Amino acid sequence: MALPRCDACRRWRWYPDATCRFCGSASSTWTAVSGRARLFSWSVVRRAFIPQLAADVPYVAGLVAIEEDPAVRIVTRIVDCEPAVLRIDLPVRVVFRPLRFAGVRGEVTAPMFVPE
Image 1 (cartoon, rainbow, N blue to C red):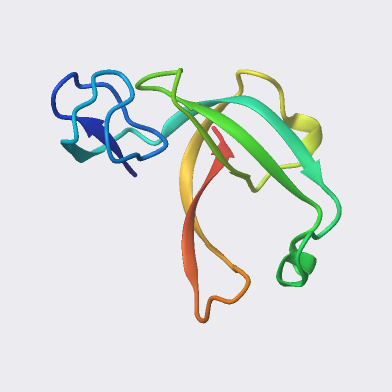
Image 2 (cartoon, rainbow, N blue to C red):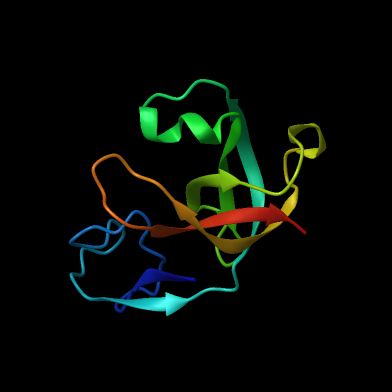
């Protein structure tokens, strides 16, 4: 997994923008991260908001804080576990899984997280 990192101040730039919100630099490089994070928050989604996700419910939508900088939080799915085992600060790691999107043909691969 890689995230944009500012070439000037070296801060992680998530969500990717045209310029760094910390120093204003327009220069960044997609840089590998460990793929490890901690669960910051989550919600069990029980209703599909678009027909293409009907087969996926229920699923867990999560917010994870990456190990490299806990201020960087990524909205993702938490997979391969029962919601009852989830807790704040649970260690998780990235996996890549197919995800369907409305109007997109073919398969899209997305980063998701599993408990460690």
